[in-house]
Length: 225
Image 1 (cartoon, rainbow, N blue to C red):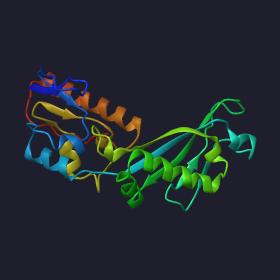
Image 2 (cartoon, one colour):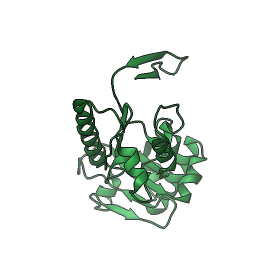
Image 3 (tube, one colour):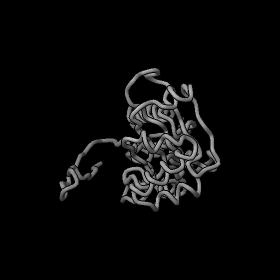
Image 4 (cartoon, helix red, strand yellow):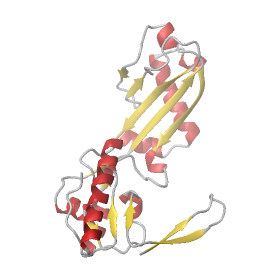
C-alpha cells in the first residue's frame, strides 16, 4: 500500500510517498476520519463515531515558589468552583530558590469550549485572573505561561477519545483492516494515557504479525487493548 504525506515545515508543501506491505496508523480518528483512507465501511463508520473530549490546560511559570515559602503548600491540588476547576502545585524541586510552574487550570466540558474560542492571550489572562483569586500574589509573581486547547491542536483535534461502549464499532476499529491496523490511546481500555497507547501498539503489531505470517490478508478480528 502507499501513503502520501506532507514533509514540509509549514511553508509550502512537500508531498512524499511511502510504500510498504502494511501500515500501522496512529493518527487519531478525529483527524483520520477526515482523510481519504482505503478501509472498510465498518472501519470508516467507527472512525466517525468516536468522540474526542474537549480540554484546556494551563501552565503558569512564577518567579518564585510562593506557595511553598508563603503558604507551606508542597504538591497537591486546590479544587475550585471557578472555570479553571483546579490549581496544581509541582512536587519536584521543592525548597528550591528558582522559579516554579503551577498548573493554572485543567478545564473540561462547556467551559473548555468557551476557552477554545478565545485567543491565546485571552485564555492566559482569564486563567491568571482566576488563579489570583486563590493566590493574590500570583499576578506580581507571574513570569510567563502557556494555555493549550487540545481541540485547536491540528494533529489531534481533541484531548482523548471516549467510546460510549466497546462494542462492535470498537472491535471494527481494532481489526487489521485490509492493509491497515490502527493503534493509539483511542484503541485502548486506558484512553488518555501513555500506557494505553503502548498496550494498543503492542496489540496491533502482534495481530499484524499473525496475519502477515499466516498469509491471510483478509480482515481480522481484534479486541484492542
